[in-house]
Length: 373
Image (cartoon, rainbow, N blue to C red; front, side, top):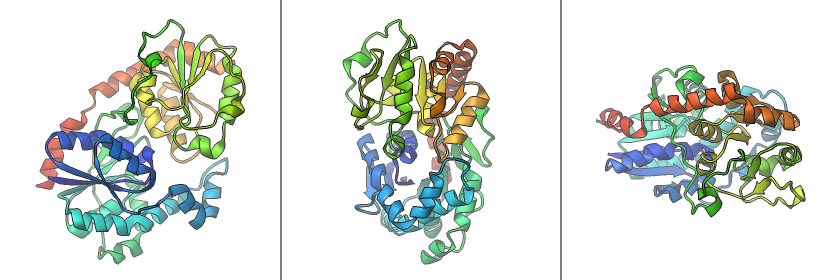
């Protein structure tokens, strides 16, 4: 069986699909990922990747084509859902030609598309092959798919497609106790993937008795919004009896100045490996980061700043597995609550055990094979 994965051109969207792609490859199927920009990083997972738009860079493209829309989406406060849908439709339309071209050449038996990138569904309809939607977090994908498709009539017509299926099997990796079930949903265990790395010695050492907090702002937030939240956290950390590990990626942190002795800056390390050594996490609310913390069974302080991050943060808060806050809330008191609230820690461990009972990616391979027959 030949399976084409189609994803939004960003790491946070393509990485959650890697475990299923691995499972299919391990079962002997041929897998190709079609995307562009930063999502091409998925090649380091050992997967074959087609670049559907060579030279594409997400941020410059959006600033050059929909700058006013981006300004509205990044303004603090409530986001108009129509703006988000307009952005998704704009990107789908721009990359659809390359995705359809890749699908025509690869001739897949099945297309798996990440929930925002419905151009994969259009390519499947064009070829007459089944498609499966792959969600990446807590945002519900069925209505999102339907609304985005409704804005792509011209894109579909350009590729000879007059309609796409109303009902699409949907792989849902969110813990069932934290979301409303998807229509046509197939539950699958979220297996965090953060790329491979040679782990530093300090991460492999036996953890010390002192509690540890992992801090990350994802792959984009710190570049857009700066280090303000990190500066507030570092100031508060001096008053908390714990070690704080700042995993901020390739970011210039000199503006932070001299840090307290219990704050360690490590650049980039695989988040899953770091969180396994932590007692809590502080982060921006990205779906992958939120699920990684739940997988580790640690309470989390979520500081959402746009996109689907408020949805993720509210799911964590409502389940009792962590706190929802803002950068202004970063103080010794809230960090202490994060570390020493036993009820919150117990709920985080409970969700970890729930995740372990969810069907593995391997268990879904047979269902996908049947679908493609």
